Length: 154
Image 1 (cartoon, rainbow, N blue to C red):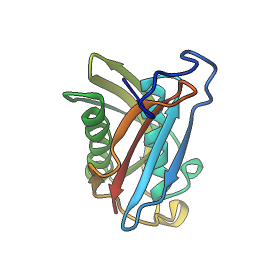
Image 2 (cartoon, rainbow, N blue to C red):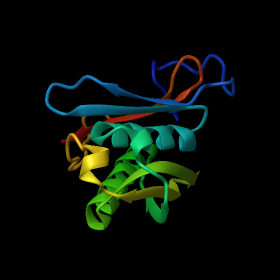
Image 3 (cartoon, rainbow, N blue to C red):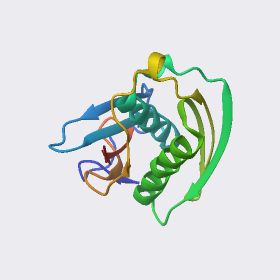
Image 4 (cartoon, rainbow, N blue to C red):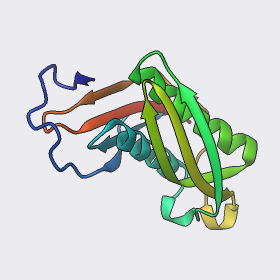
């Protein structure tokens, strides 16, 4: 995995708090997942994606769905992961809030939990059409945290 700044991580394996963020983009919305490892960064990116649509805490984890994807590198694996979630949300008419991700040699398998969309309770703000190559990066930051980010088309 590349370093975000072009340097080797300062403290690999340190205690890193997993979290998600949005970042500014002129037309769409950037999602960022941060964690101590690739799988947790991808989990956090998925929560950030849900948070674009609605408050993740409003989505009850009542139905489990299994997803799988792969990619030629970590960046395209992130794109395929986000697109798999978007497809599952659209075809199942669900939102997801729980994510258990396993990544092995650029193959991702995940158990995700969510529920059917309830417009009144979830109050969805936008519909995500898919992940884009804009702002795409998967790397380690100076603190050794894994960062997975891209812009989603809304």
